Image 1 (tube, rainbow, N blue to C red):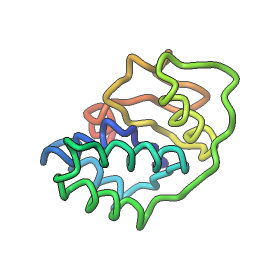
Image 2 (image 1 turned 120 degrees about the horizontal axis):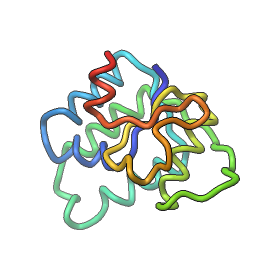
Image 3 (image 1 turned 45 degrees about the horizontal axis):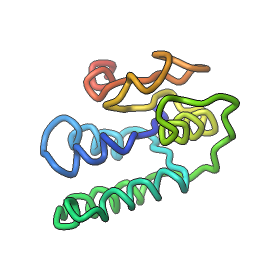
Image 4 (image 1 turned 135 degrees about the horizontal axis):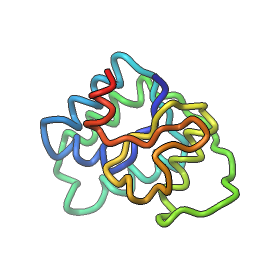
Length: 129
């Protein structure tokens, strides 16, 4: 499947072993991950916050993702979402013709699916497999 990973999933994967970290490595091994320059920037800004700087898993996971991820320049959306940062994820998914955005903040997206892109939690995605 073609997927876009919200930053909150990346952060959860870096902080804890468990569902989100397992999910990231499932995606790396068996799916196609898409990023945009804006997503990479958000990941980088977040992991450079003082509270996250001493968590080595972030850099390892980002490096592993970077070896397989495809970078796209996202389209401009014609509407706004509640959280402007989430617009980048949807725009990237639409540009990549992704099947899924995986997020821990489904409430920020107005629909469960938009133009063929499903908005799923990590558990919902894993349950599809």
